[in-house]
Image (cartoon, rainbow, N blue to C red; front, side, top):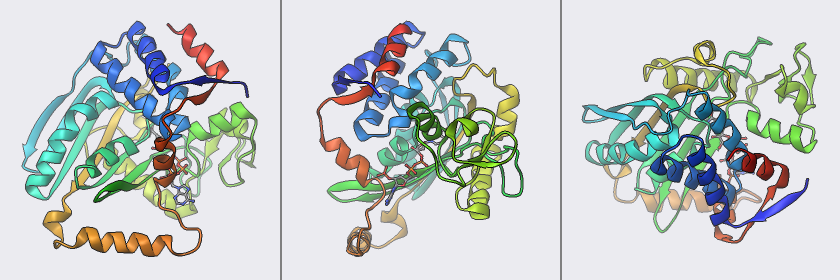
Length: 332
Ligand code: NDP
């Protein structure tokens, strides 16, 4: 793969210029470009610049409104409902997470029930932002069917990511962020682009056979949930929490409504924030730090999120796929 070296500022500027020329206003462009730059900085490669052409497709078709703002309504002391008004999820999150944090600090627990938002990013930016405020966070979202429930060869679930973040004093939060598919479709697409095989159990080809060829899975095949029936149950939970619980679609309903322009469809997201200062005693931070130390002392164990946080320390340029950069440049 031929790469081109771009500074973090150049990555931000490339994304911003592309978004501004394709219908986003200044604030939306800034918020999404910052997210894309941070994904590249952290090494979340399937959710950085790689996603920009898809966002542009959704903006061009008019499905996504790059100038809209969400409506945020506090239903009770701990429930906040957000109508994204077809804006991009990073815009929705930028405006609503401060409200969630405030409610969780006041009440001990609060939820954000987000609808009509276009999510195609990683989930760690939202859970990590909440944990940085001293709260425990959980988030999940669905998409369009790509994953077969255990027992089927047909897709019903989205790749349905879940993310959890735990706050730490004077340290980055411990964060996991993972698709409930055996592999995120973005990673399968990256493997296809770069000519790598994927492990058996990742997915099925369009004729329902197990395959290690990412192209066979991405083009008409189906992903499998991680961990067999257990992952299938968690993917089902995501459908319920980001669908019926917030008042938005299940993945299969999203697929019926979406215009298939390749951009992120309109859908729901569920976010939970809990204040350990309210649920625990004054020692919870010390107590959990000891647990993390114990984990890390056990051989090769590392904490989830650590890879990204290490990558983040390097403020230098990143090597970006040259073909992708040229494709993005042609969009503006
Ligand atoms: P990975 O399998 O790469 O990683 C999952 C988690 O496991 C990460 O938190 C990672 O931390 C951690 N991890 C990985 N290896 C280890 C290890 N050896 N020890 C401890 N922890 C480890 O992620 P996925 O491929 O499942 O998902 C990639 C991204 O795709 C996610 O950000 C997800 O939100 C996104 N996604 C978004 C969708 C959407 O619709 N918006 C749909 C599906 C996925 P670390 O980062 O530090 O490596």
